[in-house]
Length: 113
Length: 114
Image 1 (cartoon, rainbow over the protein chains, first blue to last red):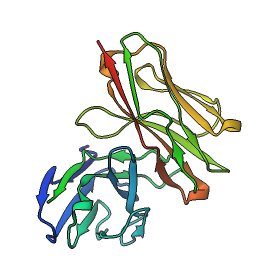
Image 2: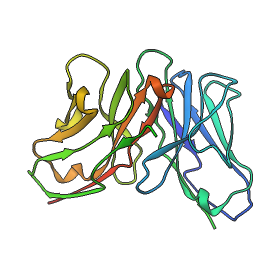
Image 3: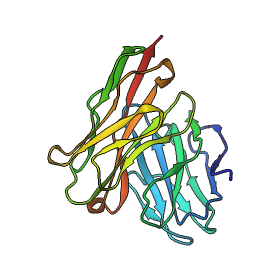
Image 4: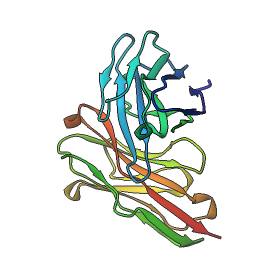
């Protein structure tokens, strides 16, 4: 099992550019999440999905969109990047059972100049 | 606002010293509690978790945590740290009252001097 994978690992964008981050998991998990990690603020939830075809807003959704067209993939889109979106982005997944443990991907470091 | 608080942002200690990291949360009702660790340049890994039962939870690498419901706390401890414990540690709470989503504390950076 590869677990949770993310592409790309690093990216530099100019203000106003768009990009999509891909998260893939091979554990057949129902739930998937996108977080951003900023110094001193822990991880903050951007969007999440409780199953294929469903998405919901998290704590800091503005400026991001997501899609979950396939159960194993969860895409995070930035339509018009801003310097405030410079961060490390982590994807996570978990199963729909009683265990609430989330499994994290390796992260994507995004810099917006 | 409901939140998760980690009291120390940075901790520096020497090898063999004891470590205790504080975590408090403000959710009522049913909670599941986690400590994650992030080694330099790596992703988050689960150290330990509490769902129910014995409030003293043992995790990997000699870590343990104690859930004290009356204090809304879930402090992480290790009796004797090693240089390899240098990492950032995150407390997280999954609360039914918060829609069963994980809420993270701000993290504590631990530096262990050899």
